[in-house]
Length: 320
Image (cartoon, rainbow, N blue to C red; front, side, top):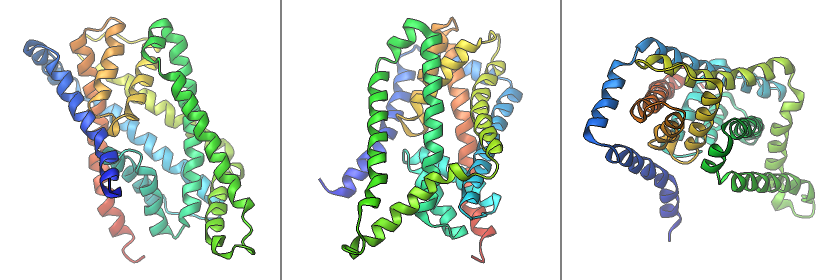
């Protein structure tokens, strides 16, 4: 099988799964239930949805500011507008090709700010390591709060943890590799060594952040906004009972994990959220409406602002 075909399958199979899940979620319920879900979505209050979108945008803005601290520690001072646009493009890219956004984000900032690609990738790896750790803490919290039910629903969590540790071991091995290269004896490997050393510097940038308190404040703020943008959706639905902390954390975690399976959670996110909320007493129609509103509001925001960022950054940096 040719490499282009393999790459295309790897990128579009998750999208296909998402489209199938949309079909499945709608075909597995009656026409009356579909009408009820659509009715609840139509009756939704716009203000809480708008507030959720604002929370989502603030998380992206904070992520750009946090990234700026890492790049500053390496001696680079990119414009904030370029960082914000790159982050929005990141999320837009993930909707099309899973996990492609980080590479595109670094490519964009490298082109406009003349930052070495390898160093930019290193800073993003630093961010992702922190985010993975926080997500794991939230997963453990959800497992603890959700009891036996959530443990059964996340019965693959052990495999996920094993995969995580395996990846971490591979990353460490890759990072040690360049120090073992003798570029004088093998000059043709010098460029490879230089790339990995720059990558290593990017990862270590977290240790030399000038304002470490602001860096961690942004990290906490990002994840707080993620949770808040999920939480506030409940106030948009008619006759929706106030959800407790346990329900919010479990719903947020299960929804967040679904995003890693399909392109931006398409199809799967509403189903995952509906499963959790329905288990905690919300009617399935209301729970599915909740999931669709939470997912679609953030996705539309990314489609609009991410798409505009491509054109806007080209105009802002037209002299570069």
